[in-house]
Length: 152
Image 1 (cartoon, one colour):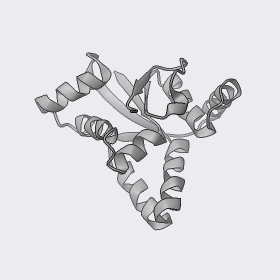
Image 2 (spheres, rainbow, N blue to C red):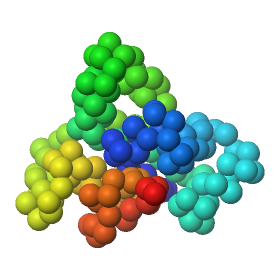
Image 3 (tube, rainbow, N blue to C red):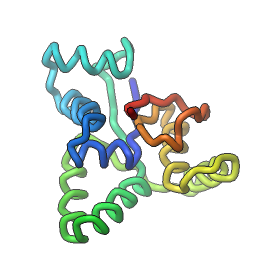
């Protein structure tokens, strides 16, 4: 099983049609059942030769909330609500913020100069024994969880 945790940076890159967001789109299509050889090659280039047949995608509810407020400010709350609904229709699983996850994120925030929402993305990757998919320069070089880097 390969667990991949998406942060808000990755989701917004996908939603805004950025080149880095194509990698998120590829993962969503793969997990949704598209098994084309070209897509398989791109997925293996992104995550390596691990068992790509068993990829699961996650986002923490805190990071999904961050996507909502960023979209809400840019495009209005109605469009933000619609977009969140569309995200929930994808194979991305939403992880709730349990007490243990809150304190894991808070512990990361104590140790690093990162946004609190970013701490939740990392904490989710740690607790799900997964890799964080991001291009957020603030997270480059963190070692608490493996990072799949999609930034420029």
